[in-house]
Image (cartoon, rainbow, N blue to C red; front, side):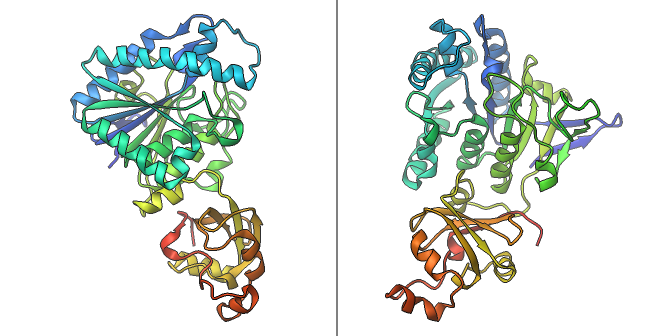
Length: 385
């Protein structure tokens, strides 16, 4: 689906015009100036871009940070470190102002907008995930632009995304977006953080996010940003696994989406050649697995060939999970190769790890499932065999 050409100059030019549904993530530092508040001119230029793409037939979704940053500016909280309740109060004030700003900016192009506030549980719990998806789908059918943010007024450190990069990827895959654009304070992926390494080389195209690519990630580059390149690559893994292409580009310039069209620097992450779909998209996008199962080489080969995970192939069980929770499956060298919904509580999984199917009933005292994770509830990562 991506439109990609390499110009004679060696510059990579990307076009957004062929994408049917596009999710755009906007960070706090792009929207809010510490001393002056909302950057209205910049927001207006982004709304111009969204209006132009909408006129071209694209459905647009926005994942927007900025509630806490804007709220603390309105409340005059300065640069001091905020307590949890102060952050939540700032979010409550900032969210109203932020929603109004988006409504005004998009409204100038005749676009309606709708606010969606999500918590981690809204996308990690299956029923709430489906409910959120239905609401956003309805907004899109009504030709409204959903403006989505984490619900910072109630989220705590234990039950939050903590960054809107991964939230944006979760939303993009939940809604079947063709493209996710992460507007950042950096214009793409480099071989090392360019602020630290002047010899860092820009990477215009990533076919697959490998461990070598992940090793290039640095820490957050802005005080207002909770993310950094590492969370962007985490977002990329979620998005590309579900068949959504991803672009990282600088959001600091005016009209940042049309800047991509003009050939300004950006990195494209290609979607997987074997994307997961439907129910398995939800499994693959789970952010924090409840536990981990380390398996032997025989189990690795079985999983990569499309088979279920049997207890006999499990060497180590870690975590405090319940039946039906999402767990990560690790190879003997510690690489995550799959995720799935486990059929046993952690205590029972420990007891039957390494056992043959015929031995399970005698250990547990009841007739149990033959698979630790059935293949219908399992998603294998896009890894080399």
